[in-house]
Image (cartoon, rainbow, N blue to C red; front, side, top):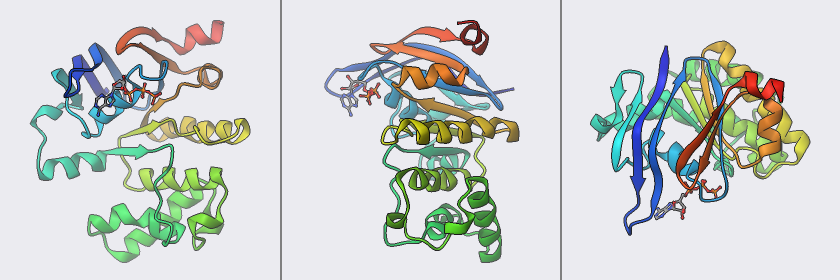
Length: 229
Ligand SMILES: Nc1ncnc2c1ncn2[C@@H]1O[C@H](COP(=O)(O)OP(=O)(O)OP(=O)(O)O)[C@@H](O)[C@H]1O
């Protein structure tokens, strides 16, 4: 089953810069893949089209059956419930505890307090932070902070998780830990799309890799090809 599809997508920013040209690919349910490429290749732009921070100039982006062109107003918030986003700088609220940060998306949806507590506890256990629920983000290590960001993106049980350079600020050991966490998500049905310019890290994961070059999709490497290499 296809979760995400790009059909001949191009993106030109106001001012004329062409960030993506005629991009087509599909992501299956429970698939993990990377998008890589040099700085400015268009990785962040691709992710922004998925969580509707940007719109394509041409072509169509579909989440399941839904063409995102037809999503606007309140539909944007609804759409973002189905797409979890992890940022490099994790964007946590520093005056709220770990548990409060993770609870936020569910509070915005108006879930009951006991339901929120249950879900937050469960997702913090999944990222091995059950014991740090009451800590403030500033009391955590960089890797732990990133795991809180991941928990916040997962707590709403999105069908797709997108992450933009999620290990950009982490050392190699912590980066590998975070990647292992992502790699476990597809087992539970969540598809994962990670943008990273760290080719060494990407290759070690032996997952599908989309390669962008100046906004064009120049390679779509299967896990089998990487396993052979
Ligand atoms: N809001 C914007 N307005 C105009 N041009 C933009 C805008 N955002 C990005 N660009 C340009 O589009 C191109 C692709 O940018 P994008 O951020 O998608 O690349 P990237 O592969 O994520 O790069 P990096 O690895 O450095 O984050 C770049 O040339 C960038 O300068």
